[in-house]
Length: 357
Ligand SMILES: Nc1ncnc2c1ncn2[C@@H]1O[C@H](COP(=O)(O)OP(=O)(O)OP(=O)(O)O)[C@@H](O)[C@H]1O
Image (cartoon, rainbow, N blue to C red; front, side):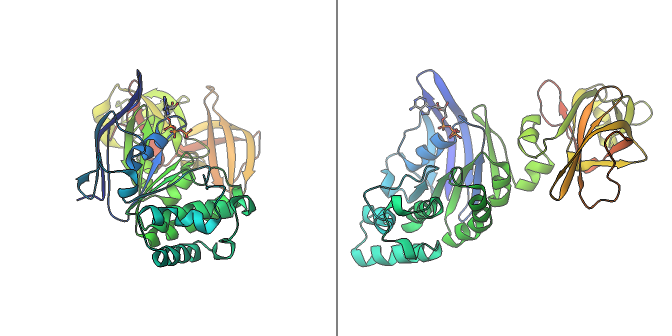
C-alpha cells in the first residue's frame, strides 16, 4: 500500500481545466518531485492533497484511506510554500509550534518538537527572532521547520528555493536530500528547476497540459525522455533537434546535414517514419568522422565548453565538451561531429512521442 495515492484527480475552475485524470503514488519515505512550467497546476495539486482545496473529481488516499472528509489539520500533511508565509506577529519558535498546537500537543511536547527540528535545521539560535529579524535563508529554514515540526507522514514543499539567492539555493540543494530523508516523510516537492529536480528526486513526475507526461527516476527522464517536450525541459544547454526520416537502404540510418548517421538496427521497423532526431550537446563528439560543421562560437562555461556548430546545409547545433579536453577547436575551424548512440533520441514528428528502437 502506498503512503500517498492520487487517483483520477481532476480540478477545474468554471470552464477552465487545470488537470484531468492525474494518477500518482508515492511510497513511505520517497521524494517525488512534481516538475512543470508555470501555471501547470503544481501548487493546486499540493493544495488538494493538503485539503485546503477540493477536487472536482477523483480521490486522494493517505495510507490507504480516502481523505476527502478529513480536515487539513488531521491529514498528517505538512506544507511549506515558496514565499515562506511565516506569521509576522509570531517569532520563529511560535511559528514552528503552530502545527504541533493545531494537532493538540501539550506544551512539553510542543517545546521538545520545536527544539528538535530547530536543531536539525540549525536555527536554534534565532528562535526568539520575529520573521522580519530573520535573513531569507533563516526564514526559509523556519518555514521548513514548521512544515516538519509535527512529523508529518506527508510533506508538501512548494518551490521552497524559488525566492532564495543562488548561493543558498546551491547549498540547500546539497543539504535538503539528507534533511528530508532524516524526516522519514513522503515528500512531494514542486520545482521548475530541472537541476533541483534531478538533485532531490527519487522519481520525477512531469506535469504538462493537464497530465503527468512521464513519471520516472531522474536518470530515466534524462536518458529516456518519453516525449520531445520532456527532452527539452531537462538539460542545459537544451537538446539539439533536427527533422529527418528513418531510412533502411544499406543499413538503418537518418540523414543529417547531408550525411548519413547510422542508427541501431532495432529502428529498422520504423522505415519511412518522419522523426525528430534529438542529441544532447554532451553526446556530440568532435573528431575525424561524421557530420561536417564549422565552429561558429566557442563559449567556456566553467567545467564545460560549448561550441555552436553550423553544417553547410544550415543545421545549427551545440556540442558541450569538458573544458579540459585537448581537442577543443577554435572558432572558424572546420570539424566533423558524431553522436553517441546512448545520447541520441528519436521522436515521432507528429505526436512528439519517443520511438523505441
Ligand atoms: N482560484 C482559482 N480560480 C481560477 N483559476 C485558478 C485559481 N487558482 C489557480 N488558478 C489557475 O490554475 C492554473 C494552475 O495554477 P498553479 O498555481 O497550480 O500553477 P503552478 O504550476 O503552481 O505555477 P507556478 O509554478 O507559476 O507557481 C493557473 O493557470 C492559475 O491561473
